[in-house]
Length: 230
Length: 230
Image 1: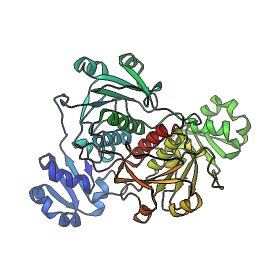
Image 2 (image 1 turned 135 degrees about the horizontal axis):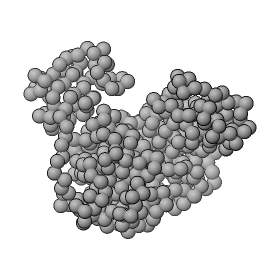
Image 3 (image 1 turned 90 degrees about the horizontal axis):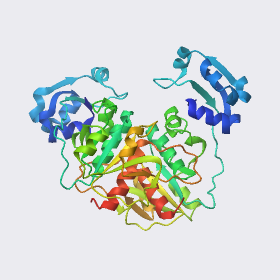
Image 4 (image 1 turned 90 degrees about the vertical axis):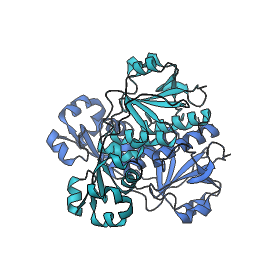
């Protein structure tokens, strides 16, 4: 389920064949008549109160679409792949969506998730991904299996007491692992890493941790800059 | 209103005088008897169903506290202040809380907000700040007034088409401004900046923007590293 004007228009423009049904306010249908052209037979006009009933948002947008799953069956890294992410038990759907959006911004096209991560098709993941779920391939695969299948990847884990991200010499292609919001990376995965990295905390800070999405953003930015991904 | 074990214990340890009332499950009261010692007369034992009624969380924690506002009345920058943040119309309480948590991690002790930013005492801000609301001073002040009061600050605005954060020479002490989630920094504030900065997007990315919290994290990390804040 995909809600909102921006993602709906992107789907209509780039993946109209993925769209199953469109529920939209009459005003939205009128405004987007030309974009809707080939999907008009899939469109059901609804009233604001009907949209409110089916929406997961507190303030429903003007359009809600039912869309086929994006299946990225073949697990293959692009030949110019510099970085992939591994999410080790990310539970918060907002974090998951924001991480996909961040990966998308930094040109990271593959994200692996452990089995116990939140469902990619949770409506909050879709919503906070801001369309990234259409562009970033997400595969469920445990770290040990990734290591076996892609021995060319240097594996970096993010921990609270690791080598400073600012000082570490990193090699690409690499995998960067982000742990669960409360518990971090699973203990059994820790021996698999080539390096354990940390984002240095200010010496005067009493904060316990960074949000998982924020940590991902900082890691992606530093690695992108160092690897000259752009 | 502050919910959850971690923040409750931090308040009991560091700011017991701020606590007005504690609503807690009997089991929590028992486990935390010694920490509660001086606040036991403020403690009301509630049942799980009573806690659910007063909680804003879907899955209520074991304790909920009513706490006095943290008032940071005097606006003063520390003599070793390197960076402050300016939030120009941040609307999402989760973003606001995460930004405070991020500032806290990087040792940024002052955050300014425009008048139209989300209320600091929104329960979601408090919750996602993970205690940072107790440690980071938040002041509502418009950018033009900050510039007048603190002429020593270099002012940097984050925009979509600015100078690369990775290449820019930055001076401290500085203010870094983050704009509203949908509209960015207000047009009337743009002429006030010494530099406009961007977080470079991958050339192969079709993403429209980064989440405001993620952008803040990346900015804080780069500036901290450059300014050797640690």
